[in-house]
Length: 74
Image (cartoon, rainbow, N blue to C red; front, side):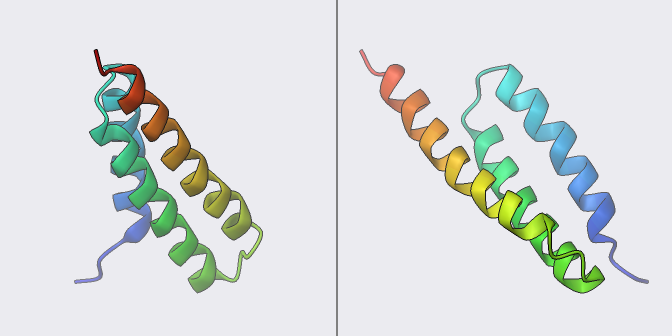
């Protein structure tokens, strides 16, 4: 049985979007994991153009998560 990263990425995209929409910080973590998976898929399929975009997204997720966490403090 072959483990399909594309299906995992699809599920992570949907779940992270739902969690972020509900303002749950765990959604940002799942989105970061998903971007890393897309980088792996890109390497395996030689579609290297996706890697810089997803690395940028990982950094952006980190900044957004930090901003959300700070804004939530009383």
